[in-house]
Amino acid sequence: MSQVEQPSDRHIVPMSGLRGVIAKAMATGWQAPRVALGLEVGMDAPIARARALTAELGVKISLTPLILAALARTLTQHPRLNALVTARGIEEVHAVNLAVAVDTPAGLVAPVIRDAQAKSVGALAKELTDLAERARAGTLPPSGYQKGTFTLSNLGAAGIDWLTPVINPPQVAILGVGRTREAVIVRDGAPAVARVATLTLVFDHRAIDGFPAGLFLRDLGAEIAAARD
Amino acid sequence: MTDVQLQNEAWEDTEEDTEALLDEWHVKAGEKVDAGQLLASVIVAKTKFEVVAPSAGVVAELKVQAQENFPRGTVLALLSA
View 1 (spheres, helix red, strand yellow):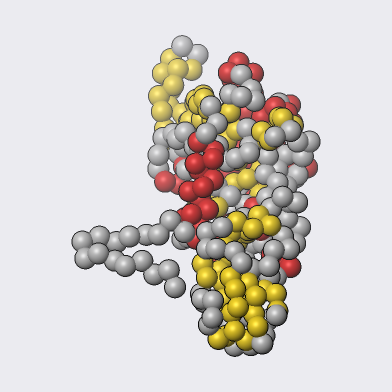
View 2 (cartoon, helix red, strand yellow):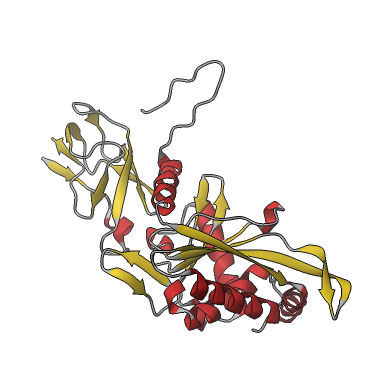
């Protein structure tokens, strides 16, 4: 029905379908008075942990489920970041329901891992693989995209260093993760090479101030670098 | 008259205030349709659904316009026998 007439010198993509849904959500998310904070974290320990877990579990464990586990632990300690801005106020949700940005042929989707605080790294990895597959196939039901309390956007696979993602409304905050890269750092007063990644926290300043949001990012960075299960 | 609605499975386990988007109509008012014919494409959250004619008939009225949101229980169109 709504086939767009195509001029000869360009291709017009209608802002409908999933593209339209994404556009509306981004426009809403952009209205939040947002601030971005950045932190570089050491990734040597998480890389080693991911390798060990891959050997132990017999399935490929990437850095993402380790970051999700660290997020779940840290968000439990910082409830203001695991929250929604609604007409009722700032809703600090008890369950940590992590939305994870997934690229699909149709566009960006963010399926939700519910109760992430109660799941192991292995369970998070398995659920993420399953959700991403179903999201790409278009078979994930609507409820699979709902009830998120915080979003992770890991663009490491795209090869970029850092990003400032748009908040996934009505959530208070989103974390962007860039690629893991080798960098020269100072260790015990001498230069050394280590693998690092840059975390970017974008948060809604209506709901939380810069200092407590900074403490959250600091704690999250420590939690990721420690690479606990 | 037969009501055309979005199938119940689309609303399963969704949040109470969830609205669906009527992305596209594939028929016009006055058009004759067969049972099972594709009438509309709908998106709930980020999942696509196809709404088909529950019976053969003529599209009497489209009650929701394309690119409009609608809540659970909304009649999308009326079919006359």
